[in-house]
Length: 464
Image 1 (tube, one colour):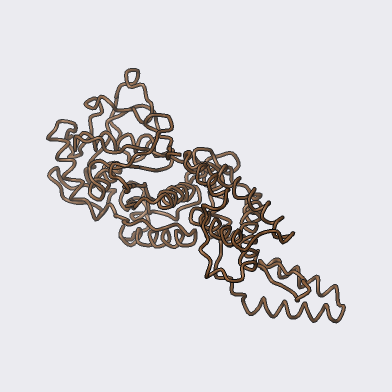
Image 2 (cartoon, rainbow, N blue to C red):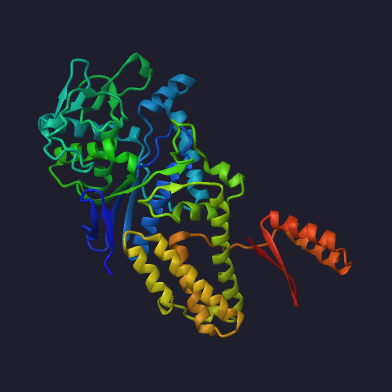
């Protein structure tokens, strides 16, 4: 089955054909580094990780660029308010972002360009837009893109431009009105900007938010590339403006496929800093999520569907992750000479269903359904000792294929000394017929993330 993605530009699923055979150039909008990213942001970053892992599984080479917005209205306002240099402020949150990326096992991008390191390229793009008469300079030295000069403006966001005319300019970087407006490419310096400015042909100032992504994506991936991703809240105005300024500056198509992820909801509302209803990765890990269960919770709903995040998600996700880990551990124990057997995921019927589901616009529900149906059947075979060693080996290969997409298995399962000691104490309590103490230790182990199972060969520990 061919790979199909839902292209926001056409509002339909399209067969994916990369510009260069066997290679995909991917640009994803990264965080604005004025604060700690919340899991509403990471819902998008996790979706992009899923997309990238899928492309790699399909055999594509991937060049992935994720920008870091380290200058805009928000970063300037916070640096001025806290009286610290903007670079110091953004360095702090960039480090926190990379720490969270690692905790969530997200494959790092090939490039993380910072906007402030690419001002020269932005100025050159703005100069091109002025020369081509798509942009104009105002009396204060700001530069605006004139949307009336670009006939396709509003195509991505599906705006009816004939019914909506530009009636004013918009100076702020981030706005959510569906009314097309001329937007800033270069913002003239103001007293409130403090020490944040760069010199340009139009005077001191700094770039608008939208031009940053256009200039950096073109610099790293060329004028025309394969896929651009982001959250649905970036669709308008940010991505609409990116298309307009990029196409007009280069004369090229810009991007072939636009993929957008839906919002994460908390108590039926979009999770956002402005509403004050958000969780950070660190908080959720401290509350009992593991990296694997949090990944699962954020991945198990299709990226184009709203994700309702509730406390029940933790238990559902941990249960699902434990099922996958348990069958993997059972198969490892079942195979006596795994290293000498060449297992193949393709020999497992569920593998074909798994890939077919992902081929269809990353249908994770269908993919996971094939996995858990196979787990159920395989557990029965293990219980009845009717599974061949070769099938067990191929099953391990299938689980590794699944893990290449979801990354929810743990391979370093060394047991901490404190857990081993508790297990020994419980064994002694059982020998002494001290069932109350035995049960207490069992519960303590459970709360620490371990199940203990009594077998004829002795107690066996398994991480939940």
